[in-house]
Length: 184
Image (cartoon, rainbow, N blue to C red; front, side, top):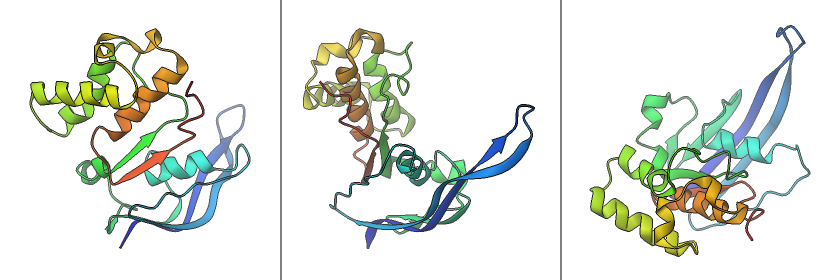
């Protein structure tokens, strides 16, 4: 069984005129099919604006798909609503291209890293704190950095935080949108 199966996925966005009226649709992803086996690493290459980021966001169900099918670990994610997706989300996590915009500027990094554990009811306060400290070390930061805010880090350090946040739940599928482009 594949970790990820995408069958003829289309993602479309409405194009609006100056008055906000939908005049047409823009196809951001057109008929993509892809299989990724457990333990396999797949890289997508293409020019800027070709839909790589949109494809990743659609797989994570952060943007809606117009048609096609997404299967993750044998579960059909295509038509699931947010409530049905919630228990499955830990299996698929994403490292975003822009780490600064993906972090809450008013939340300390340690809290941002612990938040997915809290949401998915994993561990107690002590075990979450240990997990956060271990993740910070794993990505080359100091455990004391958990008390800092995103603006106190360089772009590369913020990207490391983004990577740590993506792996905190030990996902089965990690989607990385230019994950190393901001590293220093």
